[in-house]
Length: 282
Image 1 (tube, rainbow, N blue to C red):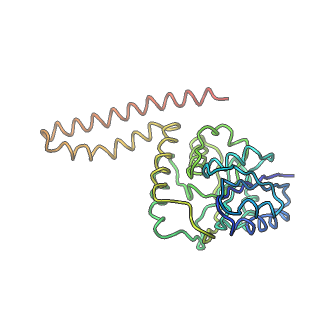
Image 2: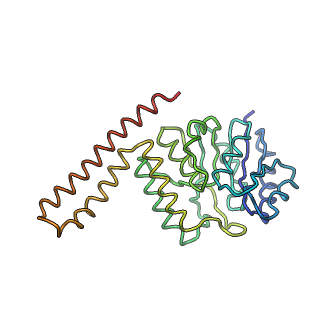
Image 3: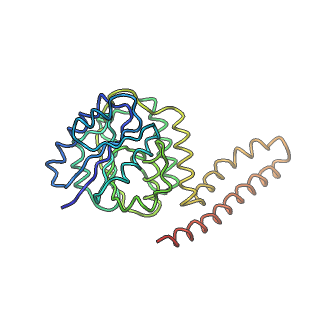
């Protein structure tokens, strides 16, 4: 019988966590899977942990707030089943979509892709999410329907090789998506709804730059040539424009081109080193 551990990271979600647990228990009971639920209380200052414990599930208390990724890693380290389902506690990801992910359980990861007509994404976040998704897609070389969905089913053995890469903040989901895609692992995207959250969002504008930076760092690890080539293309016209008034046009263009070529050569060197290091890994 297939088995799944459900990890629910929660930080100040007292108004939603109990309902999320009850709905998950209902769908898991009829799924045919052996299952367990684990709520990771990430240093909540409200009654999140108490309300989760009142539902009769395991609760891991972290004592203080360490971040979304840290809560997930804490939960994953305490699971015991073949598959791990992560889902937020705020009610945005419908428990009713869990059977769809379980039915698609193959390969290494099944991502709940928020692309349906019932996707409730705040309007101001859409441009940022689109930019991050396009940037990551260019670097990994394929279209990514949803980069950082907080609802996904992951084979537990597929997480271990990338454990040290996974950050403690919001970029956890982006990182595991890129790591699996960059190494040719099997990733499936299943459409799901995304509902209005209960309570206040924890995401801040600064998180855009953190995720952007994390995408760059992860892809420098796997495909440094692509990162430096893309940045070389982007910076070439900017450098030429800045130097245009400094010297003759031919010299300016030659200098900018030389810089872009150097960036590309450095990327190739790093790419060869990255491939060699990955080949040595068990």
